[in-house]
Image (cartoon, rainbow, N blue to C red):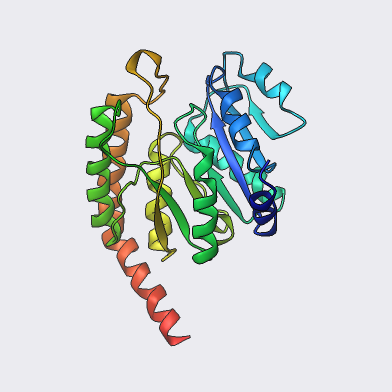
Length: 255
């Protein structure tokens, strides 16, 4: 373990939340990687039907485990992880995927960004053009980035990354209303409407060859869900999002 980073995360009340669904083959290496940097880890078993439960049993002395029997989606799993993190006294949660895409080596960058920008949302930003990155991922991200700017008036280079530091104290119990992959975009938009700063930080990402990749993202169904959410948020932004941002800024100036 890296004592300096672990101590810094303890001092700043930061944990890592890892939602997982049928990632049993990758989960041991992901946990070993993260545990090299911190002992503050919450894993949410989102109704896995493979050997994930057996894997987590081996790590039960090292990580906090939240489990439930039925798969509910990534957004729901993140919410359960945040609930547990808050119950344990954490003020920030770094979300990481359980499929081995993210590098724990990038954890220090997110923690340093949080130190430099207290109370901000730190958003890991992937390079959108790299070896083995699915083409639909690049299109979906650019599509999502465009509508995020329309809905919030701000720009981010990567609105679909799963590697982020959430300021739980600033969220004040905010949880996603949607339950699957679109939940991550939803939380970004709602935090922007609260004028929570969103700071992008470059991260690396590992995309194995297509034959080795395990993804639960459904290109058609999940893209339609994200598109529907964007449509709703455009209307909500007009009647609530942009006015609420303006009111919050005026109150801050007046105070």
